[in-house]
View 1: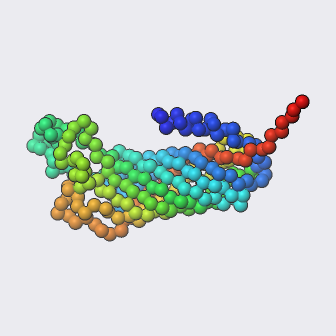
View 2: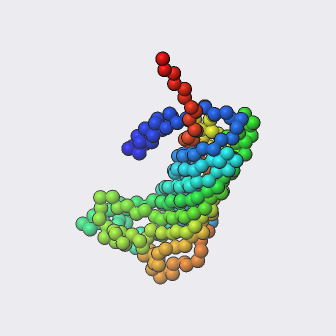
View 3: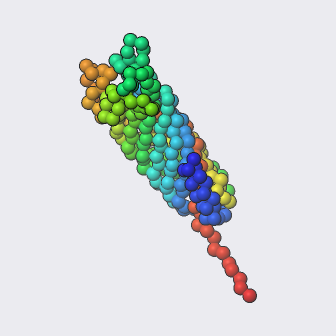
Length: 251
């Protein structure tokens, strides 16, 4: 809630920087934005997890030539786990995982991930009345990470605390490339600017753990993985147009 409040303050303060521009002329301007998206897993990623929600930010610069460059990042979160039997060896005869007091404990797992990419993009105007809007194409690449977040809430489960979590979290990291195609609207008269479209992400990753405690006799693969995601993104841009000169008159 604190971060949402700060974002609202920032947005309100930023509106003073917005100035009317002629849509018939492509302009150079910095842009920042926030976005939400969803992604369907594919490739090796689909064996572990299903659908992801993704939230993130974009910060970049649009050149007068309609090319753009910048950085973008997403935080992935989900409750769709396809892995089975993770904690079967910790379950007692009554079907419970017990805490340090011998009482039944609640153990939850959540897929989590993040990527940080640099991008280049090209805006293809569809209307001569607004050359700052149109089809948006982007290609990005950078670092990605995903793993299982293990929560025992208020319980203390010795087998799942501190470094023991590393034996179950399936930490995976590597590089990724991503393609985006969609529509971008930069308002000539204010701050109502947005973009929406589809993206396709390919991760070339590796397992970073040397053992999985739920499968101690199975060697952890050292082969390169192909983690795929296909999804959509809806974003809100905050473009910073150059303010027009103001005239002041004195008596």
